[in-house]
Amino acid sequence: MMLIGALEAGGTKMVCSIGTANGDVLQRSSFPTTTPAETIPQIVDFFSKFSIAAIGIGSFGPLDLNLESPNYGSITSTPKTEWQNFPLLTELENELGVPGMIDTDVNAAALAEYQIGAGKRKNSLVYVTVGTGVGGGIVLNGEIVHGLVHPEVGHMILAPMKNDSMSDGSCPFHKHCLEGLASGPAIEKRWGLSSRLMMPDHPAWDLETDYLAQMCVNLIVMLSPEIIVLGGGVMQQAHLYPRIREKVVDLLNGYVASDAVSEEHIQSYIVAPALGVNSGVVGALLLGARAVDSRKKMME
Ligand code: ADP
Ligand code: ZN
Image (cartoon, rainbow, N blue to C red; front, side, top):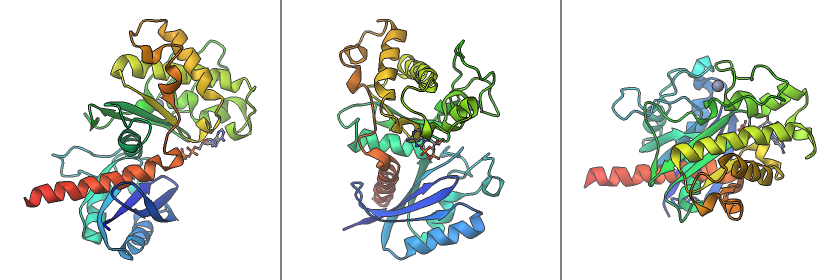
């Protein structure tokens, strides 16, 4: 059986997994993200114990994903200064002696949900995580979307709600972006209470669903995805899904001519990740499998 290495590179921890090209996870270990000098050898050590055919990486960003760039596969302007301009993909490919593929953590999760999760029978999908940050991965016509860099769904500008007591969001770059208004830390800043501790009837959730519904509407009118998957820690609050769906139907006001976004069918349009908390790791495995395939094509 061919083994693939999967790295979920996060700002606080590096989760290393071994699995198969179909996304089955066999083994997992994680290390705190400190400095590259300390953390990379731990990652290399773990993967070296297995005979892996490739490494797939879903990483925090921003990343250089321009195939023409000499810095392809590097982390670019992260606030984590030790990791600025760190060539994550090249370093791991060289140290492990295997081909690799890298994408943003959310693009990896989107790929997993698209290929074997909630979007299995669709051609397009958006995956959004609402957690410490808000980020989105996009698959359109079977392709992961990249462009100038990669989409930054979490920084779309939203219309602030009149009853929002927080005048500035929590994003240091933008006053009213999605992440600044609706991430876990934004909720905590606004109410002085962790979102984990809030009961379903807390007024925070009314505002939260207003913002997440705005986000969904923007995604629908811009990209026309066939399904929207909402994951991340904040979405553990399962009562949010029906409230977001209802507000999306209201905001669209019948304009988008598809049954999928009707009151009757929206329940299967805005959904939780089918892979649960595993979308990220499965996505990294699938990226690794793609690295094997593209190496094979190169050899032909
Ligand atoms: P990260 O984004 O760091 O990868 P998470 O997706 O778990 O990790 O997001 C963490 C954020 O989600 C924190 O702000 C936390 O307060 C919030 N969170 C985690 N679990 C819950 C929960 N059950 N209910 C509400 N908020 C939660
Ligand atoms: Zn922002």
